Length: 257
Image (cartoon, rainbow, N blue to C red; front, side, top):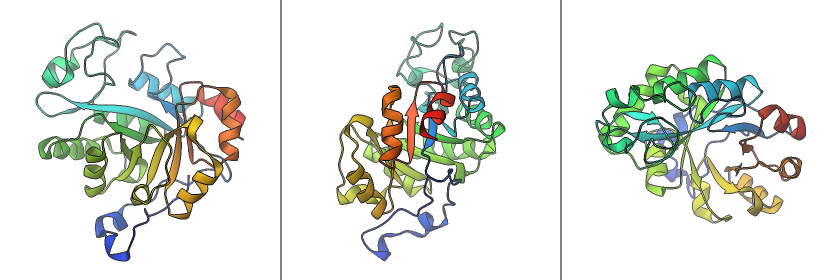
């Protein structure tokens, strides 16, 4: 992955906060980063758990993707869906729960869904970096708690990219000093994308020319969610910066070199 300060339309548009954000660890020359989507569940771990994150990193992932929601009391926790019904033995909306209730849940593999601090600590312990998706735009209180838990985890901001489909959420993270990625459901090289550290694009919509244009303006391109082995090498040839996959990271790495 290229280490860049996000491009801006003018020098004045580059904020002091953005300039102070450290760069991500460089990837091996010519190889996109391999990112475990919600960790790796092929080992029997439930998605978005410390078990799944450690499993992905142990199998060669450079990073793991995780989903953040906020409890009723404003604490950031790891859960993809609005409710806990699918991946735990409990039920109910995350946004309606206290942190205490959330921590008592059991995941389908018998573990517990983690807090943001626990998830990032697991990533730090394995030497990886984190692609953190905000499922909702945080309030000022939620953002303050988010920052506190990032600090508590010990994982440096230089090893975190915050992404979202929500423009408001991505811009909130960017203004707060994180490297921000905007998730898209389509392909574009419009100038507004150049203000982000990266864009996430459905892998079937990525072209080599589109990637080159984003790179020209300092923006990385992440391909998601790529479970087709025939696409891995093709995407590497298009010079994408990262491949997000549910498959074994070892298989993806072997395919992209």
